[in-house]
Length: 295
Image: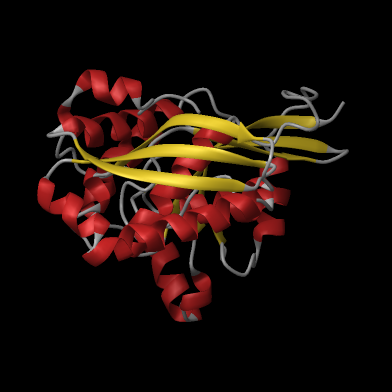
């Protein structure tokens, strides 16, 4: 019987949770960017071998609740801590008082938590030690594991320690299962990733992507993908389109190339920018976008 279980990856925004998931899986299933609230859903990623199957659960960052969207994202993160065999609490700096609530949650529910110190490729040994010391007396962590989601340093050690905490339950998903994301959702996310990477601070939080139609073009052996980019203000629409349409053209080209590479699918991408005022506080809109749901 092989070992298997669920591992939730949680932490504050921008600590590298999605990058860590992608590196562990060995495939890009979660988008990444320097922008908080990049991850908006609970994404599953499976690492399966002949000896074990680990289902990693990537979650939105645990930040402040500025609107209904950010509130839902925080709720998803908290819910993801339950019903998992292990939790990776990912940090990249010393303890701050703003983390008190999550530490108290660990204590209240007696969770198995690994403190994963990420981005050590950017740190000196003294800095890593200071981070570990700042958390040492806060909770009875299973282990303190410094890693790099960029270089992969110490990820083998993290897996080794994790397996000691997992039961022998057999496969939880079929051997070929990689992620719960559909190709449609992965396309939407890859488009949004390119928007985050190519726009300024004003745009990222207020943008959403909806794929309206996908048609297979038999003559060109490609998929024609029609997607709407939603923003909250006309000024944001102008920024996204750019002078003479240059910005949206750049975003579209980058997204198309990444979709071709990641999904191994040839696509022709058509993007439209639309204004949907205050969509982040619109319950129906968030539901339609699948915010807070599993992909």
